Image (cartoon, rainbow, N blue to C red; front, side, top):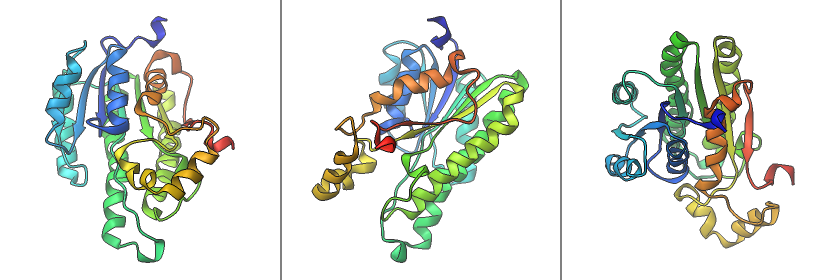
Length: 252
């Protein structure tokens, strides 16, 4: 199964210190990749140190992706830690704000757009320029089932995830011919801190579970197989795809 082997590959994962991002980091690391984690938390170095005990190197870089200068500096620091290169970029960092559409504030809108969509665009540009010199690379964006529908009380989040899906296709159209695969994973309802409010809402939780054929919320471990596939040579002819990991939710 050598086509799935990521030994020697250098990966950057944003938002990789917790939740889905942590699962993605672990999946890439378990497949042999060196991983630099960019995250806003002070615990990013501790997380990286814990992960690297089990194999390949892992590095932590603290950065706030709402600040474009910090974003640039964090990316450059991550590339430096990986030996001045990057083979795989996973844009996972995301934030959530919940309020009815008519009460949603402009500040909350701006914050969510900046982290979830603009940062994905800017980081894809930065990584893509390095990958283009090698005519090879993998950019993996984290979309959502909300790339397909609008949800409730999350107008900014739904808008960003629709945008991530379209951004994935736009980058893929231009970069596929030079050996860079750009794809997205669309998680369904995942049991992470981002969804604590939904999990604790008994009525909403019951409605969500009733529509998931797998009859459970997803976990970060459910993301590992797909991210390894999309980061590996096994996906070299997969371009511009938005692949759900949702327990069958979109098919129900």
